[in-house]
Image 1 (cartoon, rainbow, N blue to C red):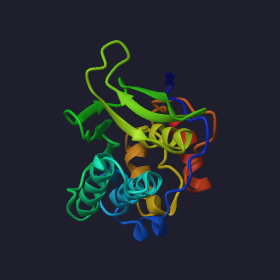
Image 2: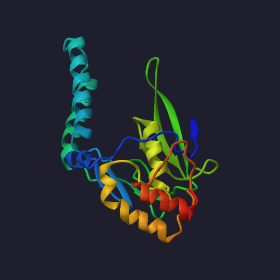
Image 3: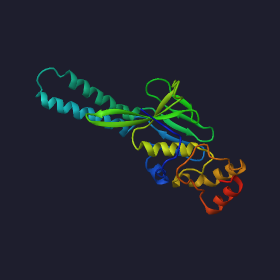
Image 4: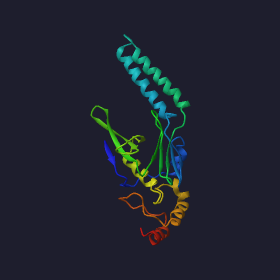
Amino acid sequence: MEFLSKVIKQKPNKINLEYITSNKNVITEANDQFYKEDVSLKGWASWIFSVVFSFVAFVLLLLSGGSGSLIIEIILFIVAFIMLIYGFIAPARFKIYDRLNGIVFLPNRIGKDATLNFSTSVGFIKYINSSPGVMSGMLKLLSSRKRPRQGGFLAQHNLDNVWAFTVWYMDKNRPLPPGTAFDPYRQKDFERRKAEGFPKPLYPSNIATPEATKAQQAERLRIGKW
């Protein structure tokens, strides 16, 4: 297990408008107040599991030659069928970042959903043996390190990138992260921070997080001194 500091250590991948419009079942909202992802097992997220279970059952059936007990194969085919149907009827479940209030909402398939104050929560990577000799990580967020009563799943791929984006977006005193999806909201976000006197960032960064224009950057430096 590796606990993470709330530091922007790299420039996250851009969240572009084109990506959102072509993946409506993934990112459903990205603006100056909320970032929302549909993390339900709807569509291909569920159908992939169906294909995997069907493939494993088929391989086992070939290896056994159809002889002996077929209980395992039958169970796998049943699970595959259930996942196929579930892909059509799965309810939407959203991971939500509330930038202005500093709240992260994480749905859990087992147990209660988690509503976390990002400033006091703790990010960590849990490493597991995904296959013999292969380690994979899962990025999670806990309510605290000492008393992790609540928590949830953030990502299973591109962990450093997801964490960098999360810290950047949840720092309401910084400009919005890179990407054309946020461009329509940059001026509004800039005016809000300007009205507040450009307070210092909530979390440190190892990279520059400039304003959208040189004029805005100069104004932030003049008023906020950073």
